[in-house]
Length: 182
Length: 399
Image (cartoon, rainbow over all chains, first blue to last red):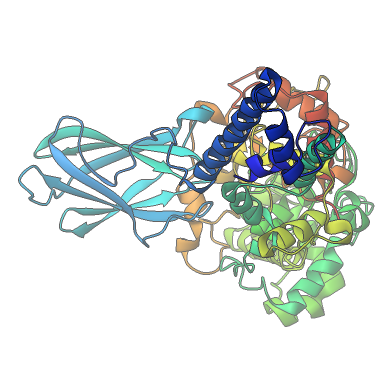
């Protein structure tokens, strides 16, 4: 709308001084091919400007949801062969970059029973940076109800981290991978 | 026609005017805020050193830090390389004490916040670090019993006021150390276990006093911090807090395309980790494999967190307990240095390999492979303008 007005106000007619004179000119020259051409051109430009304005408004106000699909960052998942359901959460609820942290790995069987006396090996790293974990986290305590304290985790950089658990108990051996994005 | 041109010119002017203001996305603003010095938390207590925040210990530590008597020939102190008017570093590619070492002196601002010390992290506390150059034959080149005798001779009153009575020195040799010359080693081995422990306790307290002093050395606010604060509060940056277009471009690259912030993160611009970034070795220096060779050294150190001279609980030893001991990426991995003040303290890298920030940026853009192990960095397409902008931004991290 603004664009159209602006184009009308600043008409390209050599004699045009403003809206009124534009209209007069158009009336005076009605019937000549040249006037019609200018009129259509002007209307076309106005509409184009309007379209650009609307598109800009839509683009600027729309939520930026068109991001590419990221890695699966769910905190609860089935292990790779479906032997266990594992969940992995920070013990204090929040992840803090650059500090030694404890997380809790909870292991249940398919039927929901707590997994006790599991042997847990932990590895991982940052796949985009060719390096493993900056620390060697370990399962240091069994907290009951299938919950194991994983101590010594440290996320030193922002980005995608992967933590792989190899789990072994009476129910069998399985692995699970958790993605953590900082 | 002239009005049309007028209108178009105005439109262009308005659009260009908009570009002059710093225009950061919300994600960029969040990253910039995370780098600002006002997000640096208060210094945590060091429970492994119960004298860490005792003023008399810091005062004694300060005396020892500047005392050239704390060396074999009475010419070298901590401050010989950690120069107080030069960000506590010495501007040399490799430090020179009694002899020439193979590593660049590290500056000390914020050092008490490090989990690991030296370029390769071969010590796990500030007080254990302070002890290491004292006995290094290329640095202060002293020996353990000589330092204990020196404390008694020079500082017994101050020492005992802080740490309690000095041990009985009768029968303790003047020169003995488990790390010294063959004669010094033999003398050390001839001492009783109780004597060795008594000397080690005095020696550990020397480190604890120096560490107490070093805790006071903290980073100062810079132009970048003033800019970041204004950006966060929405205030118009004034005076030197206003960034030029080049500095803004450099900042955007630093936190964006150039990936610098991946490792140089947080208010100290370091992740406190060890990385192989393909920095070339120096031809005439002994082989240097970085972190991979430091693991055994910190484990063997009697003054490490698991050792008998730690104060407080072993729960403070998480870094040592969960240390990565054996991984291919430890080969030629070195600590990420803080970038605060870096622009005014060339040369750069663990042995002063690069003499200017331009060379540093060129190295990271090229990302040449490591001579040993695997470099973590990837080549970057950076124009000359972008390289200059990165350097311009790094210069804003100085006072």
